[in-house]
Image (cartoon, rainbow, N blue to C red; front, side, top):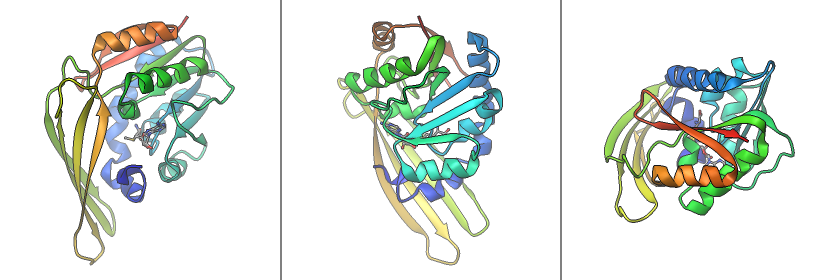
Length: 238
Ligand SMILES: C[S@@+](CC[C@H](N)C(=O)[O-])C[C@H]1O[C@@H](n2cnc3c(N)ncnc32)[C@H](O)[C@@H]1O
C-alpha cells in the first residue's frame, strides 16, 4: 500500500483539499447527467479515496456507494461523506451484487498497471452498471499523449501543514506504466519538518487499447476531453 493511502492518509485533506475538486466534480456531474440519468439515480465510485469528488457528486445522486482498497482513506471519506455507504474492497474483484445508474472511476484507475488489471476494473464497472447505465473512467494519462511533468501543492491547517513535490516520468516507453515520485514535507506543530518520499507506478495505455477493452467488456464508449488535458471515457452498458 502506498504511504499516501496508508500511514499518511490522515494528511490527505491537507495534501488534496476538497475545495480543489469543485470544478472537475461539476464537470463529471455534467457528463453523467448528459449521458442520461433517471430520477433518483444511484452512483458507485470505485477507488473513491478521500471522497473529494463524492463530496460534490452526492448532491446529484439519491444513493452513493464508495469503494476503496484503503481503510485509512475510507475513514477520511466517511468523515467528509457520512451519508454515503463505504465499502473496503478492490476495484478489480469487488462484487456488491447490486447495480447502479452510474459507475465512476477517477484517478484511482491509474493504479491499474497491466491490461489484465484494466480489463478487470472495466468488468467490475460493467457488472455494477444497470443496462443502459453509464460508466465514467478518468485516467490521468494515455500512452498517446503522455508528457513528463512536475507539480507541487499542499496546504496548511491549524497545527499541521503539508507541501509536496510531484515528478512524473516514463522510464520505459515500451511498457504499460509510468512513474510518479512524491516528496512530502510534513510540519506538525513545533516538531522539526519531516520528509517522506515514495514512488507510485501507474498504468499507461494507448487510447486504442482503452476503446478495445471497453468494447470487449460490453460497453459502447466515447471520449470527452476535459479542461485538464485528460480524455474521459464515457461508456454505456448495452
Ligand atoms: C488519488 S486517490 C483517489 C482520490 C479520489 N479521486 C477523491 O476524489 O478523493 C486513489 C485511491 O485509489 C485507491 N486504490 C488503488 N488501487 C485500488 C484498487 N485496486 N481498488 C480500489 N481502490 C484502489 C487507493 O486506496 C486510493 O484511495
